[in-house]
Length: 125
Ligand SMILES: [Mg+2]
Image 1 (cartoon, rainbow, N blue to C red):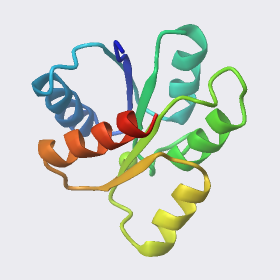
Image 2 (cartoon, rainbow, N blue to C red; image 1 turned 90 degrees about the horizontal axis):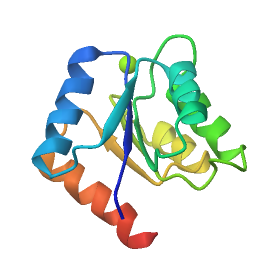
Image 3 (spheres, rainbow, N blue to C red; image 1 turned 60 degrees about the vertical axis):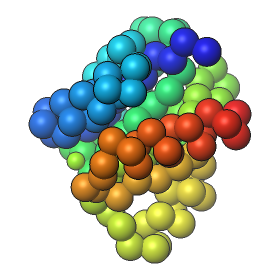
């Protein structure tokens, strides 16, 4: 499977960290978005995106709202979603899982953790 990632975070620095980690893992195909609304625009415009990595706390449209919108849209509802966020309390993780993220990482993270979580999602697919 040739993966094309959509990396969504309002922090340019965090997008760079995620993208650099992806490149180190051999994934060189990606697009970026700075908030949930921009992410939805990219998903609508680019049918080739097949993996979403998203932050939670963002302006305009949050990562949680992004997840709910993706899961409610038949055209994109099956896309794997990995949430990468500073929100580490149990209630937040449960809420994200209920919104049907596939996996969850609490920042800060290591490239190894990112690899493990992506691999878990791909193996379950
Ligand atoms: Mg943020």
